[in-house]
Image (cartoon, helix red, strand yellow):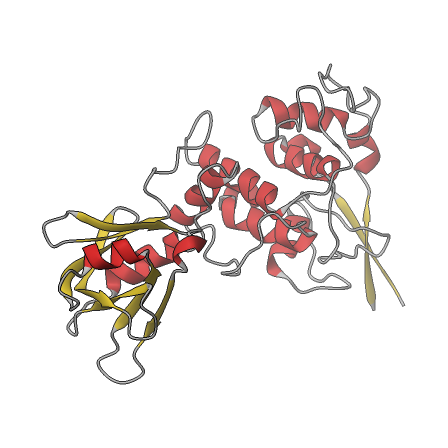
Length: 315
């Protein structure tokens, strides 16, 4: 027996009255216009210009992450914009034991050619390398040997060790952790430090919020946030952000024709996502437009818009 899924309530959802919009590229009669208005009203989406929304524009992973963070923040009692990421998030430093700064760097500090490794033998000690100028090298290690130092990530002390010129290159210095180091704090802060974008990225606050609240835990470590997002990305992020009550099932969907993805099934059951064709295919690798994103988000904030799926069987 083959299960087929059809979107029975879609026509009613598209006939809902459209609110007045300030976007010159969103016609009043467009199938997505009312959803755009609702999402803007709820501060889930914003325009791409002073009077444009770019409904046919491709949604990026950063946009998906940002709306997921906004949904989670709102469901957790937050109001208004997302909290600001701390200024020292994504920054690092090597200081003296007394706290005097020796070197500063950040996540995107390509000028310092930031790299690190662990010893293969026991004890596994961290070695962090930074490129410096000749003047810096002389100032940092005036006697040419190792000096006691402290490694700071995201404004927090994570390791103690020593700083010395790197053996492989006179323009690089090497921080070596103490043999008895506890790497708990280092590992925790490193996981937050690495994805931190440079100051000025529009999604910096969302990325920090997502990291702090565990929304990134199920996501790839090397996510390309400025690349186009897929329907699969959207499903994963939404299920990470939404509380269980927001995903209360209104449909019985046990299987989809092209995926067994749990997030997709949960959103179908909740009437938030529907298929891309008559078979109900999820098409997780397919991209989505800002208009499509608005419609999906409108179903989340207004349960009356959710889609009741009619299932049938055939030989």
